[in-house]
Amino acid sequence: MDFEDYKESAEQELKRADHLIYVTLKYTRTSEVIKNTIKRLISAIDFAALEALKYLKVKNISDIPRRRIKQLEEKLPEFKKEVKFYLLMKGIDAAPYSGKEEYRKNVTLLTPAGDVNVEKLKSFFERTILLVKNIDEMINKGK
Image (cartoon, rainbow, N blue to C red; front, side):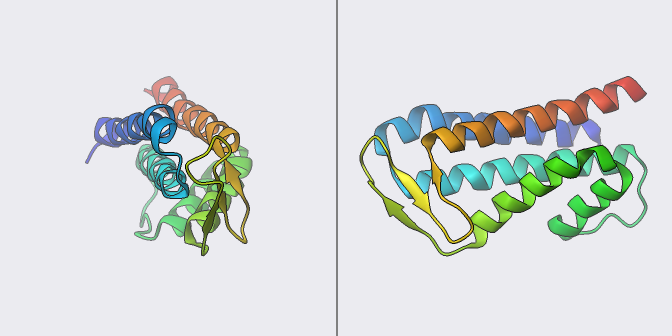
């Protein structure tokens, strides 16, 4: 895959996440939809990190996403906050979970790693969009 493939894959994941938040979650209001949206956001960041590492010509890019994101942090220390954000979402995704107020307006995903309601999920979404955009801009400046 080349840069454009990774960029396109990240954008596709963001489109899916957008649909999950603004359409699916609006009608179903379940913690499972929140969890699936977080998975999509993680996947979008994974593709963006791969795109950045390929652009930076990193040798031996790890197959393990957590190591890959750490490689990105080593090459681009300015992404330290984004790496922490990514690891937070990975922790939420991996943790056992339950739902609160399912099928209601204030549906919340409850995990030991942190609780995620609809507003927090939207902020995760916006932050992920910004991260993917920043990586794209960095690559486009270098071309």
